Length: 86
Image (cartoon, rainbow, N blue to C red; front, side):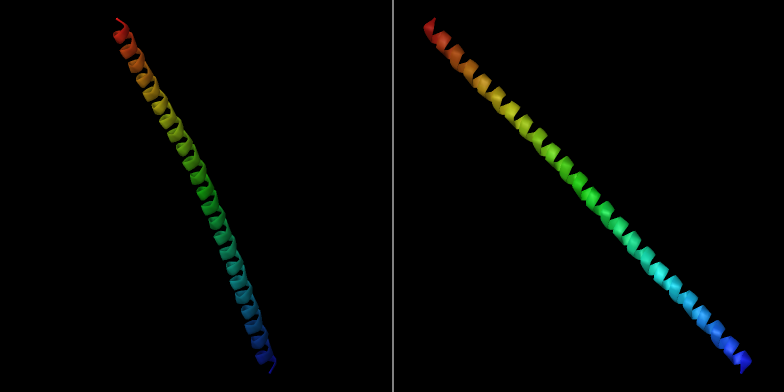
């Protein structure tokens, strides 16, 4: 019976150790998942910033193109006007 008690105590200690390891693993899994989620969010934010910059650059380029077309149109109008006066 003394031996049985020792075996029971040993089994209980092993059970506690295994349970503690499982709890640690769950906690580590949660940490890993939360880190991954944070990385994904940071990546999404970075992509949104890049998208915003790209859109601004595109708008600047389009604006410059429109201004250039307007200038060309204005020059054509002026040159026609000058030709008519000659």
